[in-house]
Length: 364
Ligand SMILES: *Cc1c(COP(=O)(O)O)cnc(C)c1O
Image (cartoon, rainbow, N blue to C red):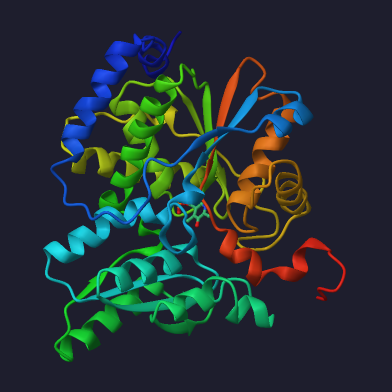
């Protein structure tokens, strides 16, 4: 008990009544931000009993943010509820965003723009160098196009933020009113969606008398984890939050999450302090790189498909699951009874990677 962060966290064993009243206060703080309804919320919280039994660790639960509803669902929908409302408030008629070729964020943004009657320009960065026909045309790319977005590609390593600025300039010249959404929708506006998710989850668990010990999810552009860190701090929850990295090394990932959580807390405007100790990422499951398959991911995706009837994706949630399963085996959760995996979606990307799972008839 030497460091103050630890002391203040350990002193947060608050009663369920106080926890729920803090949730209510957070709802009120969030209600001052414009929001459009895009998702099916609250998403279900379900036990994964066959998986729990098989792994022999804590009881595992899944928070079904793969069921947010918009164009096959996923975590970007919660962020887009705040981002698209901000775009509307600013009088925008055109959305610009960017992502990797099989970006789930791009697909959900294209769908949100379609629903709200806005034009949508998507810039896709080739981060994997794959020429597989399904990778470049199927899965999320097919859906981007079905939603009527204009899709253009850029080489790996392109400065995508600059590309979006340049495109916005061109569109302004043409009399359009563009609004740029950063990759992954990860800024303090988008992260509010996961501040709200933290509140939703804690209320939902209280409603069924469940005490959640840990919450685990895949972390990439960091808005999901930054929002959760901020939301859990706002309601003084002692749920142990762990992000499983899919791209950056641990130090960089944690710093990105911490910086965005601080900016999100400022944006929320309630005077909340973010503790660095609350930001934890394990980046040991990235493998050879972003969007590149690993054996652990393949095994995890197959295991969940076969034991729970759940679909995870090769880039994010599958690597997150690999991390969860391996850390259960390593004993990380040994003194915990209930662990929730936040399912961030992404199953549409499976159709961009059909050869990955070693099934007969899908050739490399
Ligand atoms: C974007 C994404 C993530 C990561 O969320 P961030 O907010 O970018 O960290 C995780 N899973 C899926 C399926 C995603 O599409």
